[in-house]
Image 1: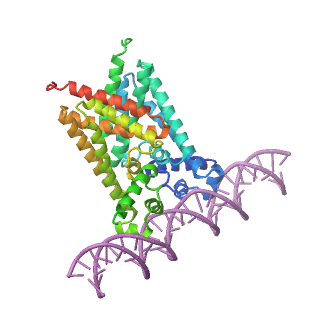
Image 2: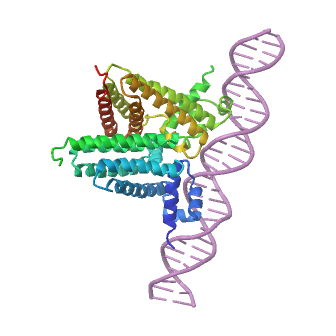
Length: 195
Length: 195
DNA sequence: AGCCAACTAGATAGATCGCTCTAGCGAGAC
DNA sequence: GTCTCGCTAGAGCGATCTATCTAGTTGGCT
């Protein structure tokens, strides 16, 4: 079956998320994917960099879908934000504090060392920001305020991941969920069209 | 002179910050420090892990001092917070978006792969959180609120670093500075003892 | 002066790195 | 049938990784 490419991408997503790009060997990825060595360079002639770019694009899109699903799960946006942060915390507890954002570690690793991958990740981040901004606007937040608020929410989420994974306590994520919900409530109340 | 150990720590701090732990070779550190190979295992018999632990402890303490300096630079805490985020943004622009938090990249790399280093970084993070909580309390924030607020401020800072370094735009840091200042203002106004 | 400890210096081992190469398998085209 | 092509399969290359080992140098103490 032609699912070898998918298996390789699945394995690299998990491994990059846990140990980063430089910390993950190609042989380790292939072993985890149960794929032979030659297959990688057939599917990804560009080698590790091309595999990383493909992994990031796919994982970035999937993660956006996952988070967007939580944020759209009900009519009350602040409640959904609280729930999304709490859900991320629950996932971390279940996975021994391993499964947070699939591209954050790689983002920091390559920001100053691999211009191509840096741009690939920047595009993913921009698409997240655009999506969240649009969601805030559609809930009644003013355009300028939504841009700033989306930055803050995404930063709080990614930053809390760093502390939660390292300290193995979920406090930071829960505190951020609460604070972000409060900020969004404030932005909605300031809106004239509020019913 | 006996400053070889310091030179090695300086070099490893800079390199770990830019390219992470796994992405930095020992030879690269020694070349940057102008130190011979044998010296490393004299000063750090435990090898790379011991060097990493020493680098993290020292850099973590220095960074706390740096940030605390900004937060204490004047009587108006919200203004200082805004200024601290803006100052971090300025530093990033000056260093081609390389110099943010010296231990964030390593924190994500080792969280699920190196228990000893994970604990070392967790101690640094806890000390940061304690310090910021105490500062908030001394400014009149209630104890419980200060604990949560310190989590949020630190998360926003670290999370914004990820986006700023990757997108090479400072928007996220500035938006977070504004939002964190607003949150602190709110926590201070809710306080009865407000003059 | 004589000596020891601290430190510098680098060759080298053994494993692992990303990657290239050739060979073989199996399904569809004709 | 048999030819072709997408894909699997893994041996092996040169480079690089961390770490060990022995030697040489330096500075300070008695």
